[in-house]
Image: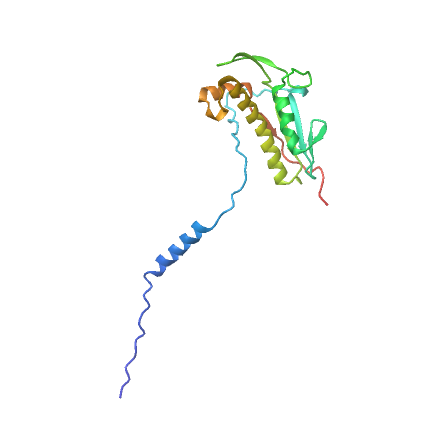
Length: 196
C-alpha cells in the first residue's frame, strides 16, 4: 500500500506584519523619551561680500569677562561668583543704571516709543570655558546670562506698557531689544587645567 504524503498546513502570516507594527507603535507611544537641554540662539547673519571688515576694538569697560574653569568655578571680571549671583552682576553690567565709569559707556540713541535713550549699545558679555567644564554648569551660566536680559526687558516693558515683554507687539519688542540688545560672545573652549 502506498503511503500518501501528508502536507503540512501553512501558517497564516498575513497579520504578523500588522501585529509587529501595532507593537512598535505601542512601545513608541508609551515610552518616555529624555529631551536634551540646549540653547536657543539666533546666529549672526553671514557677512556680505561687499561689507568691509572692520576691527572694532572694544574698550575694556564694555566687556564683561565670564570664565568657567575645569572645577566649575565661575569668575566674573576679577571676582569669583556662584552661578546664582551672575544674573544680578550681568544686569548691572548691561544696564549700567548709575552710569559707572567702570561699566559700559552709555550712548544716546533714538528708540521708537521711548524717544532718546542712553543705552550701553557697545557692551559685550564674553563667555569662556575650560574643556573640563561640566555641561550642566555651562548651561546654567548660559541660562543665567539670558535670564538677565529677559528680566531687564520684562522690567522695561512693565514700566512702559504694564505688560510682559512676551506680550508686546513685534514693534514694541524690537524697541525694547534696541535698549537691551543681547550680546553674548563665546570663545572656543581651551584646556586650562585638568580634572584629576
